[in-house]
Image (cartoon, rainbow, N blue to C red; front, top):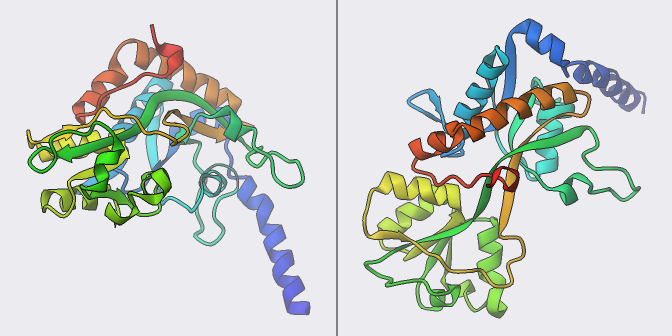
Length: 292
């Protein structure tokens, strides 16, 4: 019991030290550095190619740092089981298991007011330490298919006869195995990630792949195969099919959020973000607030 009490006391004493890693805007500017968390191995958004950081989130983070007059330092973030875990580990508390530093800013956070207002069992905001802001992209679900084996995709019902690949434990996985009372479960094939699902389509194991549009666009761009086409079907009974992607900072650092938001607006309105996405073969859909 004495040993347990000592361990608990040590953990509690460590908490303030971790919290102290949250830098103010002035401290960040004085250091001349913006620490940005991006997801690891998440092409086309953030990944490494021959040891060099690549991806639209990486380049956008660099453009934002430049606009603030500071250098960019990347923090590669392996995704946790839930977004709540990622926000905790990289924005407001840090992982005590990995001696990890906190980021000033985190990319690719859903800009969703319902999620931001989500409360726990005792009525507290689950992400009260975090401010989610700065939507910079609309995202949605997309199917790509091989025209050599599938003429068209009028609806997802076609996948009763044609196998389709998805990432394991993803929204497309849950959707395709449950829609139409599970009629597509037998033809839905699971892979560790979207690249592996595309490789399976190339090998003829599946006739189509479903994932986020950005991931699909990137794989189609990389494949450079005119027989790989993009479907335009809807997804009945799927719920939310289009959502905004933004950023997050610690709730005490709203000054940074305001500065980043101002820089982001300039980059969107002058076409820089659109051009950035195009370099990776992605279609850019600006958030609703920037639509004409």
